Length: 234
Image (tube, rainbow, N blue to C red; front, side):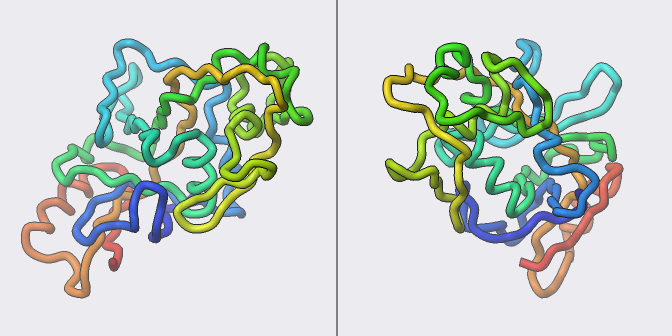
């Protein structure tokens, strides 16, 4: 993993905004770990004490004193977990934040904790007999067949077009790994944490003039964190 994600159209919007602040993590085929290494398997139900904002991100400090970024992925843009994850596989992670977010609390140990309302599959035992093929855990764990492995999402998420395994991104498409057969019960979901991803940089999207005026104070605040800070041309 390395610093900057890619710009461009995503399911949540047409691209990064001039003047916007973004927390980022890029992906690389030559990185130390495959992207799927950062999936939480099994998905973890959101603890009652963890406040989650419906819009924007939330900072949460764990018992060891490390501050993390909690991000609820909206179903309106990403109806299912694979939609978000396959987009990140191509473009990296780039999450817009308020310029007033106290990013100075972040450090090199900080992570994105991604939450989705459909992250945990609550009835895997009922679904397993209806899978088209045998699903494989993306994190390499060898689970019994009836578990709610995170990888099961790539088998139970509906395709965009009947008879295919195709779903569409903001730019391009991706393929699911299997499907549920006829007569399968409805999938039951619960809100959960499905990924824990390192944060590798803070970016400010700038124009041709670069960083000027009041933006300098915002950059100084970002530089108080333990993360690299970048000025990225729009």
